[in-house]
Length: 134
Image 1 (tube, rainbow, N blue to C red):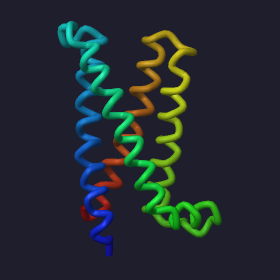
Image 2 (image 1 turned 120 degrees about the vertical axis):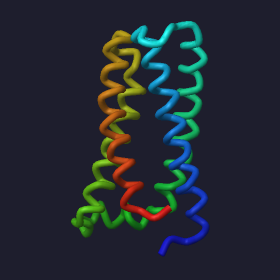
Image 3 (image 1 turned 60 degrees about the vertical axis):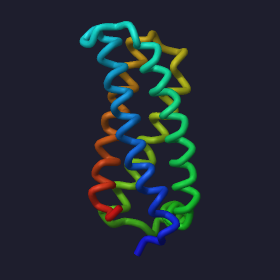
C-alpha cells in the first residue's frame, strides 16, 4: 500500500505530465505551422518551465523510491512492472540527453528527436499510471 505522503506527489506528477504534454503539443503544432504562429515563444516558455518543474518532482519521486532503484541495480527486479519502470527511467535519461544536446542539432532535427523520445516516454508513463492506483 502506498503511503499517504507519496499520494500528493504521485497525483501532482500525473496532473503535471498532462500540462507538460499539452504545452508541448501546442508548441510543436505552432512550430510546424499547423496552428497559426504568434504565441509560440509563450508556449515554448511554458513547456520549458513545466518541464523543469516536472524534472524536479520526478527527482523527488526517484529519491522517495530509492529502494527500488537499489534493487534494480542489484538485478533483483525482473517482473513486468519493473521492466516498465526501467523503460521509463531509461527513456527519461534519453529525454534529458536530447534536451542537453539541443545545440548540436538544427531546430527541426532537435524537435523531431525530442518528439520521438518524448512520445515513447509519455506512453510508458501513461502505462505506469494505469498500472498504479493514484
